[in-house]
Image 1 (cartoon, one colour):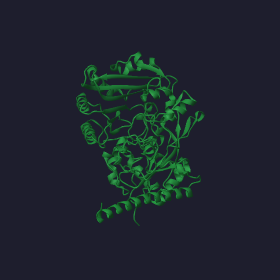
Image 2 (cartoon, rainbow, N blue to C red):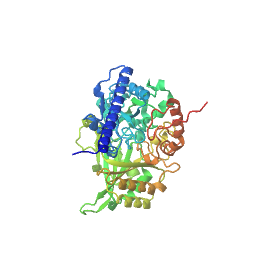
Image 3 (spheres, helix red, strand yellow):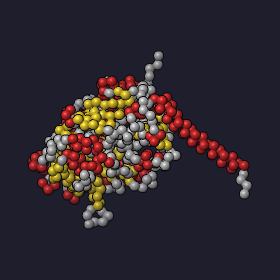
Image 4 (cartoon, helix red, strand yellow):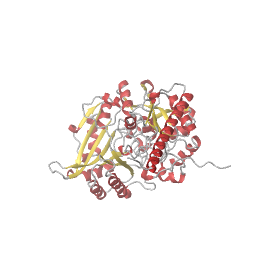
Length: 535
């Protein structure tokens, strides 16, 4: 059978282009490897590289990525993934990315809600520097501190602290598979935030690689940069290598409970009351509310709203019951609802593990939540009226997998100044709302779910903070605005920067301009430098 000459020419062109593309990718990787070995004190094994031709590429890319929405075939993939073994490898990666003009993304735990640590939608080609192998933890009980490498999970940190002491802890995330590096750069809240503030409020020192490939500690980087990395969002100022964290005292016995109320059990009125008291409660008491749609028992196909009051109390059950009777009797908490336990076991309870789970599960560093999802956030300064809650329930029941988590503020969070670190959501904030929709069928009905959460967000506008309508940077939301490729606009970035950081955004921009004027560390919502003044 004879083929037309035009067909043969087209086929040859396709083969040539794919060959050129492969050669280009190979040459980028080869150049990078050669450059790394020239700029690292320690040799760089080939096993630290994985490109798209490697059979392990998919599993490594997906290993810690949380949002399956950013792992679909249509999403851009990195040229290769580099997994450094030593700090000098990270230094060399920065130097070589800069020299070769390769865009770089940095991943510690893969929890970025918009996948920014492993996907670049605005700039390709790109590579991933995956810090998963840098996970050493050194706990020093005598000095009430620990050095923690950036690739460790917060669950591993909790375990290593508890291994050394039953009366020490650290006030950071409730999800135990969070990577420490990125988690603390956004603030890091958890169930002890009302007692001790955020994880970022309890950082004593840090080691980072700056835009010039230099390793800096707190003294070398100066107080402005040290301020910026504790809550100013990840991957704008450098690559975090490790944090020195301050340990906090915890009692040998703490108490946990979960009490669930449905609409049929007066959920709306109880939640309205929670809004009035949550930020005023004893600072040893943290009660968050997990709101979902649930099937009504015995009525197949009929759904209601379920509100679960999920709590940690830093003390015993007797004092907890006394506090609840005085401050929030409407919940109807009883002794049989409560479990006295150790702090480390309370971590497992709040994270949703079954009651008999051994703490060693925290060493696996595995996520229990991988889904297609979209999330948004709000901060609330006045109680939301019952009529507005009823409208919220109506919208919740229209969606398949809706979830909202309300986290109380007050206590220590009200005592720390808005400008102490870049995280500004302090005095006057009653609680924070996280809205989530998650689904399982990939791209198929994604538009429907995205439309639902955006409409829900619009509905909530009159009841939440305004001017700006604040948001939490660790619940990254690209609907708020995005940078253009490498040409970031300060004016454009203000749209989301003021929501995440309020008045601290301007100081973050000044720090960025000073430490990374060429904008080497950049992504869809990185802090922009001010334009360089000409002559």
